Structures are given as structure tokens and as C-alpha cells.
Length: 625
Image (tube, rainbow, N blue to C red; front, side, top):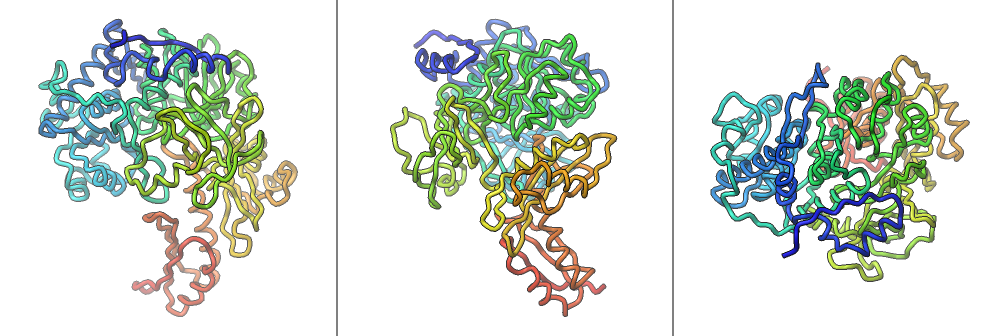
């Protein structure tokens, strides 16, 4: 058995990546093959060192919670013992629907030690939560009383997910259901022989699902740990590291790239409130918080970075070494403006849940990143642009710099989806060449290219491409043009359905605080700054607030639903002004229900909305006007 070692190496260049790959096997970089084993390694050396600080309003400079490494390991073991006990000694399946509290990590790792953990978005409605619990056969749900009661409480949950036999709460007054009270009876070493196969399914992480049931990604402890090591080499693995933690724990960015990455290397995780970067007060006080706790590393979405850029704080006295952004494109003007103001380069990275998280990034060599790209592949990662046929089979590799569908090969590719029928959409076939053992090519669904220096350029999701009469339009060109307007805070472009052209480009914008936007002026701005004539939006829509996902990315599915509603409403109201438009997102495809009140309007409305790709149903209301 090899001596447990923890390799610390920062990536400053492509040569560093090559050296890592030739000097180490992927399994030789960390002291153990399981999450608990790695945490035990750190705790044995620094048991009393703070692992997690949690801060809350109103005083961000005094931690509300402090968890040491000894506490963390004890909590993981106790929750694992509790979950196994509840499951009658068998592998447990635990859903965790929690705000950003320390138990969101310790109990998740306890669940993976005892069986399988399922992180759930606490902002979801009960129906999708229950559907996930049923599909995964979860028998335990860990949440807070406040979160569950907002969804109807225990009775509603058990009616929708009868397989859940035990509901536990974090920080509850009733010791019968309080996690800490129940786990106290199971403290100490593991009371069972854990399955330490690092490749087994340990985590089922929901992804997508904005317009239908989410996909469940089968994730392993090996995949999580390998990505954690890579992210640490990219974003910071120094023992004095303090990571600002504002991305949610139901997302791999919060759980793996921030949480696990920091703690495996013995750093301190600074959780910025129970709602993370959703807290406007925490974002507004970020630089004061960063100065006080000596934050060295940060990963956030571009919307969070933009809020900091438009805020009042300053970075004087901060020791922040790495500010990485991911989840959506970062405009060049924003990167430069952020550096001009704060002296810090925003470094874009790229990854996906199906790959256990981050796979490329900009190495911090104290120079300006190659703005517009998502960086270069991390160790044990390969990226190429290809052409696939309609069945997902390889046709050819693209030339250097040529746009195509981006594929990623890495040993951290998921085992598959919980619904194996979806696997064929992710794993392409017929890719030539031999891969090392455990490596698999995965279809990222992104359009992009790889340049001569190995930088990866992402031009958007294949499904986000706007196709106007056969003309492919990159929404990023429209978004970058609008983002250059001084009064625009956020911009997003989508394809609005059109029966003649298929899609027409439309743009949504949100104003900066204190600014007023004029749609006509912005449309003229686009005519000047969008270079492809076909890409100039046919309409610019000003919203008070552009919808965001729980992670903080622009929610394009929500904007598509809005665009479809506007189109159908315009057609239906020309016939029946009282017609009601309802978006149906219960299935795999976006649907629309048109309710008319005059029976004579039913057939004319049906004909008016026919010919679109989305499904439309028209029926007469039983309630008279």
C-alpha cells in the first residue's frame, strides 16, 4: 500500500500540465481514494484548524458558525452512521435539500460514505423534488423545516414521494427530527464497513430540467476528487488558502470546485450566507469580507462579477490571488474593466456536471488571460471540435480554429445518466484513436473551436444557436454588442419562433442601477455594433430583471418561454382578446395551452398558431366570460 501523499502543484503554463501528466498517475495525486479518507488525512495534521466559516447578516465580520477539521470528519462519520442505521444497515439513498449551511457538505459526504447522496435545489417546487426522490428511490430527506413547510410540509412530501420514510431537519428544536441530535447517538468511527470503491455511484446530481424533468448524473468519489485536484492546481491549493464560497451546494461548482477542492487541501471555506451570492448584502460587502478573512480564491458566475464591478466597494488591502468565472461567456470589455478597477484578472473556465465539473481554465501566470476563450485543458483532459452525424456518430475532426461540436475526453466523465436511455446523447460513437483506460469522450453540447495554442473557444450551446432561415446566428455577438452599451447591466439573445423563418433573433436587456433603457435606442445600437445583418435582433425587450438560474446564470429557457408566450398571445389576441396563454413545461418539450372563451374562436386560433415547432393546444374554457 502506497504512503498517503498530497501533491500540491500550481499550473502556470501548458508545460506544467505536461509535466503533471508524465510525472504522476491520476490516482497518485491525493492521499486517499475516498472523500472521507482525504478529509481524515487533513484532520490528522490540523484537527483544530477552521475548515468552514459561515457568515450571515448583519455582521459579516464575525462568523456565525465555525467548523474545525476535527468537527468536519466527526460530522461526516456520524451522519454516515445515522443514515446507515435508518436504512437498516443497507446502503442508504439520501436526498439533501438544504440552504448553504455546513451540513450541506458534511451530510452530503456522509451520505456518499453510507451509500448515495442526492443534492436538491431548495428553490424547486415540491413536484420536481418529489419526482427526483421517487426516481432515485430515496428513503431519507434532509432539509430544514422552513424549506419543507414552504412546499407544503411533511404530509405533502409523503403523499408525493411515499418512499421517503424519514425526514430530518438541520437546526431544529425537535430532537426527534433534528440532525445533530439524532447523529449524536451515532458519533465515533464508522460503525459499518464502507464500500470504498472510488468508481461506484456515490452522487446523483440533477442537471438541467428547466423545461422538463432534470437529468440525473451518476457521479463517483474518484471523479469528484480528481476534478478537485485539477481545480486546486488551477484556482489555488496553498495551505493558507481561504475560498469565498457563494455558489450553491446542489451544483458541482459549489460542492466540488469550491467546497471539496478547498477542504481536501486543508484550506478554509468561507460560506457567504445561507443563500450565497443571492445575498445582495453579501455581494455589496464582498470586498470588506475578503479583506477581513484574507480571501485568496473565488469562483463565481459572470453576473456576480458584474455586480461587483457595478458596486461601490474597492479591493484595497485584499490578497485575492485567483478570481475565476464560469457558467456563461464573459465579455471582453467586462474583463478589462474589472482589471482596471480592481487590479484582478477574471479568468474564465469551462466544464459541466457530466464531467464532474471544471475541465479547462486560464492558468494564473500573472498576465492577461486570452479573453474570449475558456482557457486550456487541465491535466488528464483532452478537447477537440468535431462534426457528428444525426445519430451522434463521428464524421470528422475539425481543422485548427474551425468551429464544430466540442467533445471532451477525461477519466472524470460520468458513468452515465440514471436514465440510461439518455446516454447515447452524451457519449458519441466511432471516435478514432485509442484512449487511456477509464477515459471516455463526452459530447458537451457546446459549439466551439480549439486554436493552435490549445485554447478552447466556446461560442454557445448548440441548442442556443439561433437559426434564421438556415442562417446560423451566434447569440453571443448580439449579447456582446448590447453589453457594450453603458446603461446595460445584462443582455441575453434567443431565437423567437417564426413560422416563415423558423426563428428570429430577439434580445432581452436589464438596466444598470439608476439607468433607464430605451428599446428603440438599443435596437439602433445593435444595428451599428452587430456585424452580421441577419443577426440584428428584430426586437429588444427591456425587463426589470432578467431571470437567472439558482446558480446565477441567465435562464434562457425562461426567456424562450416568455418569447413563445408573446408570439402566441399576439396571434391569439388578434382573434380573441380574452384568450389566456399558459406555458406547459411538464414534458420534455416546451408546450403552450391557449384557452379561448368564445367557441367560435377555437378553430381560427388553432389555425393561427399552427406551423410552429413547439406543441400548442387550444381549448374552450368551461367558465363563461
